[in-house]
Image (cartoon, rainbow, N blue to C red; front, side, top):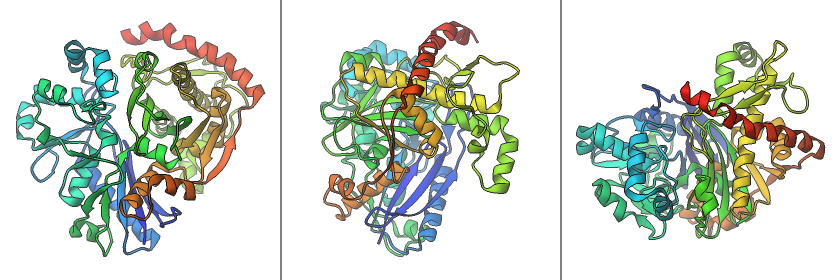
Length: 501
């Protein structure tokens, strides 16, 4: 029959239908908003996301021409949390990972436990984006909802609960919450006791790629299936993307450019060394059994390009609608070779790793009357890639080998950006045949749970195809090395100004 990977991202859901040889049969997507009701807040209507996720599933299933599926699994955004009632309905909007209202709660955690101890215990740096300070914020600021809540769920356990009636979460996603002890392989008793949260109010933890039960008949019927497929435990979207791009051994790295930009590198041990701690890197369980991943994060990522397109490129969007061309390609078609004459600091949602400066902001320098839309668009891509290089260097300083970057997500569709990543990082960039690797990773987990694949490794070995490898060009490397030296001075130069703004 078929395997389905459902990707629940920050700004949209994507449903992918694969055959049992992991050939992509059809995809469909739905966008949904991020609500910013107050400065530093970022929320989302989880029930609306569920409705739109079902719409994307129904469309993908219809386009694929299937009536039954073997199994479905999930790749989901991390950190987001919502209280739910006994029936699994959200009692308030999801607090998203990019929500940074929790500075006071994060400071309390650092005082009570110590930043290094939190990292040693959970693999997660002390950071306002984590799930843990969000739960504490809910307890302190919405006590009535805290009391009423039957459970506190992330998107994976929320969706699995909707589909099966049982709240299960992958070890992978649980270990991103800062509530999970990666050494003891369980929810942290020490942390839960300190914040007064009973473990029964969290989902049960399972290994990625194991069964969560059969889909409820009313849900399968609603999305257009005549059978009840197996629902499999999935994982964090970035770790699913790492699996779908073939990160099954140390030395391979993935760069995912979507709403956020993330690098993940596969590790055989949870190496919590000083350089990774100082760089605010997170280390957690991979969706691939027996491995861990270390992750860097730029919260802004491709969201900066989307903001630029939606705010300043109305003409190109109109032309794209009329011709079927991509609006980004229309903006960038006039870009000159080599570095842009302007330089952008892409801290539109704070700085991400390694500094996690939530008061930092975006900046564009070098503007003249000759500056074009293409110059600015290219500067956005370059600024994001310079941030990528900063993080890659810290990983390498932490003793992590990176032989190749595998590019996935929306950014992997741009040849200009892929070559730029190779030129700026100095590392070959490989593009899998299926760039929607998070959905493919979820499908692999679904197939593993259903017994179609012996294990994820055999699925990857048999079916993963690399479409193209971009090698660094020495002449461009030289130019971008010079620009990188300038870029490293930009954040320190305007840090105080941004803080005062």
